Structures are given as C-alpha cells and as structure tokens.
Amino acid sequence: MNARTWCAGPVGWTVFLSASLAWAQGVAPESPARADSATPATRVTLEDAVAEAFARNPTYAKALLEVRRADAVVRETKAAWMPTVYSYDSATHLDGNRVESGNVVLAQNELSANVTVTVPLVMTRQWLTTEESRMGADAIRATRGDVRRMVAYATGQAYLAVYAQKLVIDVDEIARETARSHAAYAHQRYAGGVGNSIDEVRAAQEAATDDALVQQASALLTSDQEALGILVGADGPLDTADEPTLAEPPSLHEALGLAALRPDVVALDLRSRAARKTVDDDWSDYAPYVAGVAQPFYQNPATPTLPLSGYSLALLLTVPLYDGGLRDGQHQERSALRDEASVAYDAGLRQARSDVRAAFEAMRRADDALRSARDAARLAQQALDLANIAYRGGATTNIEVIDAERQARDAATDAELAADTARQARLTMLTATDRFPERTRNPT
Image (cartoon, rainbow, N blue to C red):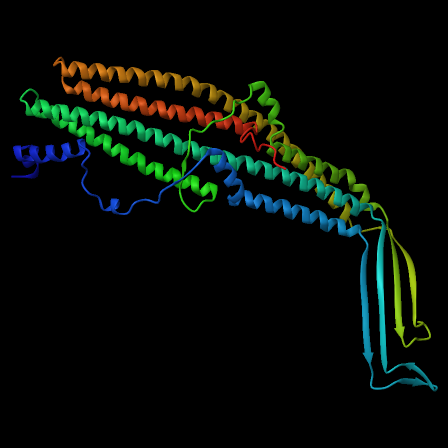
C-alpha cells in the first residue's frame, strides 16, 4: 500500500482527524523551540520611547558630537585674533669664560629669559573667518535638529508597528477560537450521525491554519519589538504600554508654511547664507594685518648689547601684496560653493513642500480607506454570523461557513492594517512639519 492510498484509507483519515482536532482544540505538538522562552519585552509608552531614543540612539549621539566639534572649530578660529603669550628661557654653561683683550665677552654660565606678548590689533580676515565658522556651527545645530526629527520618526514608526502587530495577533486569535468552535460543532454533528467527515476535516483544517497564522504573527511581533529596542538603544525588546496618541496634524496651508521652518531646510538655508558670506568677505584677503609685540627680557650676565633686564616694543604691519594667485583661486572656489549651497537650499525647500503635500494626501486617503475597511470587516462578520446560523439550521454546508470565516478574518486583518496605515500617515504628516514629538519639538 503506497502513501497516497494510506492517506485516503480509513486509518489515514483517523490519524489526520486526530491531529487536526488536536490543533482545533488548542493542543499543538510539542516543539523544541518552545523549551526556551523568548526574552520578555519591556513595556514603554510612545513618549518615553522617543525620549529614550534621544538619550541613547547612536545616530543622535553622533549629531550632538558634531555640534561640539563645530563649537571647537569656532574656538580655534577665534584664537587667530586673540593675544598670545610665549616664554623663551635658556641656560648655557661653557668650559670657561671667553675673554678678549682682558674683557669677558661671553660668560661661562649664562641665563636668559624673555616673554613675548603679541596682541593682534587689526585682523580683518581672521575676524570674518570666526563669524563664518559661527554660521557653520549654527547650520550643524540645525542638522542636529533634523537628525532628532528623523530619530523620533523612526522610533514612532517602530512603536506603531508593534502596536499594530499586536492587534493583528488579536484578530488571528479570535479567528482561531471561532474556527475551533466550528470544528468542535462539526465533530459533534459527525459523532451524532448528523454531519459528515468532510465537514469535520475541513473545519479542523481551518482551525489549524488559523493557529499557524497566530504563530507567524507572534514571530513578526518579536522582530518588531527587537527593532524598537534597537532604535531606542535598549538591551532587549520593547513593547507598547498603551495606545499611541498622536497630535492633530496642521492643515495643508499651515503645513506648507511650516515646511520652510523644518530643521533640514533651515540647515540648508544657513549653509547657503554662510557660503554667500564667504564670497562677500573676499575683500578681507587683501586687508593688511597690524599686531603689537611686547617683549620683556632678563639677561645674566649683561652684555654690551643687552642690559640685565629691559623690554622692547614693536608694531608689526603686514601687507599681502602678491600670493601667486591664491586669493583668486579661493574666490572662485567660494563662488562655486555658494552656488551649490543655493541650489541645495532650493531643492530642499521644494522637497519639504512635496513631502507635506504627499503626506497630507496619503493621510486623507488612509482615513478614507480605514472607514471602508472597517465597514468591510463589520459586513464580513455579519456574513459569518449568518453562515453559522444557516449551517446550524441545516440550510447549507460548512464550506460557506469556512469561506465566511476566512473572509471575516481577512477583513478584520485588513481593517487593522488600514488603521496602522492611517496612524503611520498621520505620523508622517507630523514629521513632515516637524510636529513630532510636539512636547519636545524645539529643544534647547
């Protein structure tokens, strides 16, 4: 007897029915994977998840370090026009005095020390370089704000994905319980001599299918929880603590106005202004430098040219006359960078406004789709109830019931996915206008 014949025989049906009914009644075969329970996920609210992401997300941490580096560059450029003080000291020992015509011209032991104080008085180019570096630091701060916005967006997306997946599991579990109830009723009918074996098998198969969907959805939930934990910077998976609540998004007209204030657009605008300033300040490359130098000294023993102690004062004027074309090349480079920054700002502003329009339309369509999906789920549930009534009354077979169960399950799942799409669209709209999270929108 081959395998196909065995499966079609009475013994084969008995074995298949026993396994299927075990699934239908929630008695699944023991799996080795169940021996090791998964790490429990820590529950967290959306607000706390975003706050923790700001504190521990490595991408945002790098953005904060870039701000520190930019401030350090400003400090470095400022040092070029600040006073400097240097000390030069020496001690010399010879094998003996150097004597000429009976006079000591170089002592055996000599000690000398002097302090040079340089005070820049007119340093036009350096002053303007510091101002330009400050504008660059402001642009980097705005970039930090954009990184903050995107970290919050990614965290919000992951949080909503976890929340939606839990709802999908709820739908699959309800569908599984409904299928198990139908399988138990079909088994009862068959045992009482009213139904037939094919109805019982079909019902048990549907219950097993729904149980498989529950397990698959649970596995996806674990992946989503792990992804949320990575974004937040946690050492393990994170779970949602409550239903996420998002702020009311602005109107389309208001959102288009807010697009120009988004951190990434502001950063591009600041870079464009800084690039224009470097070109406007080209004249300073031709400006002279004036510095004062004071040098007190100590010389022991004194020499004919140097007394024991004293000081000298000097006023230094530096006039750049010819540099081999360096300044002309710098002007051309700065002009190209200015034009590039201007093009980038225009493109960034257009992109921000496009993001707003696309997000607004997606949000509107998602809300409409959610209403339709919920209507479809409600009608599919009504169809399932009617199919069960007809089957129990003997007016139809369980094919219609199983088909109605699948449609109700799929419609309920689609409704939850549509709800997630609507939430994600609202989050995208808020992010496109820098309104998420609202409480920490403008950090200091």
